[in-house]
Amino acid sequence: MNGSRLSEIPAYVTKDGSSIRELMHPASHGNVRQSLAEASVPPGASTFPHRHRESEEIYHFLAGHGRMTLGEEEFAVVPGDTVLIPPGTTHCLRNEGDEPLRLLCACAPAYRHDDTELLA
Image 1 (tube, one colour):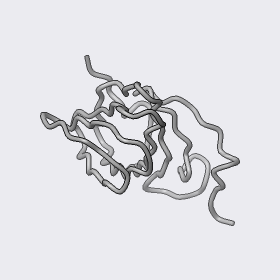
Image 2: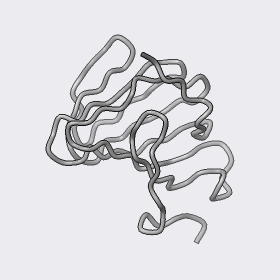
Image 3: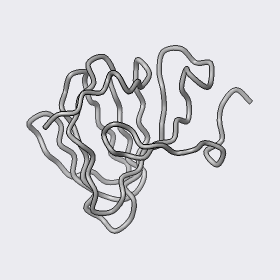
Image 4: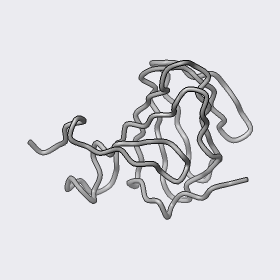
C-alpha cells in the first residue's frame, strides 16, 4: 500500500500545542508537495496563536466543537466545516466541548516545524 494506517502512526505534539498524526508526509511516505495530518485538541484546551510563512492550510473538522480565530475573525467550528488558512495568517483553535476536537489538516507545501511562528 502506498499510504498509511492511522493505527500505526504515533502522535506527537506540534509547536502550536495540538496533537497530530501525520497521515501522509514527504519525510515518511514519498509524496512531494503536501502533507495531511489528523489533529486533536483536548476538551477545554487551545492551540497557541501561530502562523506559517509558506504553507497554505485547509482544516476539515471531524468531531467535537470549538472556536477558531483566523486573522481578526472568530467563529464556531463543528463537524463538516472546512476552513482555508492562507500563508501568513494568524490562527488558533479552542475546544469548547467535552470531547476531543478532531480535524484533518492539509498543508501545501508540507508541514514543517520551522515554518511555524508562534505569536503572543
